[in-house]
Length: 314
View: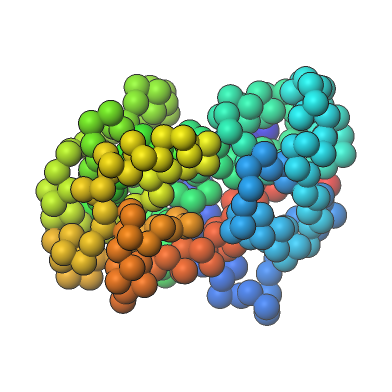
């Protein structure tokens, strides 16, 4: 059974298929969308609050002809001590797929091993692969000729600023290797990528295409994309003062944007905190594609579900 727990769970040809499907779904929305999930029920289990992820998956399942069920973790026995084994086996007999947004990556891995239906990672503290593929599509729709989505990403440089050990940074370490991109991570000491993501990259059979620096200007120079994320993620509120002090030199400003390519893009997965990780004139400036990213979550996640649904029982 195929799952989507990390970027490299899809081979390059499958990643290419996802990007092509996302484009097709976007162009055909409201006119023609293949009912890839017809007759299927997919359950969303969220331990973390969400706006874009929940709405985009809910709408996407409907548009693919399926039926979504939303379950807060406190609504089910898994939140009250039932084993992952029991939960995975029971849900596998009711629904056709699971979309899980939780804290620990290990919880997803257990669910995928113990059940018999596809599991999609809708965010953990360690990875956010749906966002990475959405970002890839958001870039490719600008750079490709409509047929070479994956090829259009190869050789492009992304500069990422701030907490370079968070889930978005980890996901882009995997994504950059898969898509053939150069990734420069700029952040303070103590927030650099950890050994776990390096191990997973090696186990996936990919050579690292990233490097780490403390110099934001060096990272930004000649970049095709400047990317950042919130400095204080859910569950890190007690560290906010320390984190903000450490990362303030890595705020994306208009001066930093000028160091990138003339047509460099600004990206952020949202929610954003103006005046913190990014300045307002950049966030809402002409080079920002943040709302395209948000919209493209819908189309890309539909594509991911459609690819996984090919192996699901009716």
